[in-house]
Structure formats: structure tokens, C-alpha cells
Image (cartoon, rainbow, N blue to C red; front, side, top):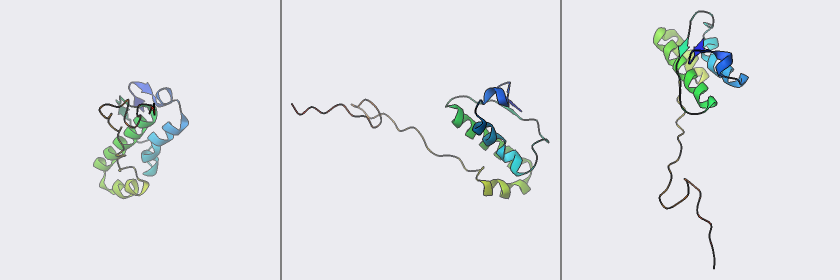
Length: 103
């Protein structure tokens, strides 16, 4: 398995991220059956590992329809819909306000 032309262990330093990436393959017992090449960019390492997990799950779903139910039961075909909140005009950030001064 290569992620951005690096081995999985070299690209994802945290064990938690490596487990997340391999989870869809382990769910359907095809961990040793496929060579996986992934290009990913943007976000942090946890977000990237989640994106790779979703991509692998979708590829497995397209490969064999019998894999859909185990992948869906594991929650691997569900996209995380959280997004960064936009910065509001006249303020310092999305939630941050300027300091209030009574006098």
C-alpha cells in the first residue's frame, strides 16, 4: 500500500491512522489481495486517513457488490460532513469576537 508514493507506515506516523486506513480491507478480509495506490492532499493527517478509508471502501463497493453490507455496517461508506465554519465579516474569526470594552 502506497500513500503519496510512500509506504503506509512512513506516511501515517500514528498507529490510529494506519488502523483506520486498513479497516475497510480487514472488514471484508481482502487485506493481502489488493495493491492500493492513493494520492491525498489537504487537511491534517487524521482527515487524510479518513478520506483514504472512504476511498478504499468506495473502491471495494464498486469492485464487488457483496462487500456493500459489511462496509455499511462498519460505517465505512458514510462521509464525515463536518466542515470548517466560515469567518464572519467584521470579526476576527468564525466564533471569535473583538474584546468588549465597557468604557
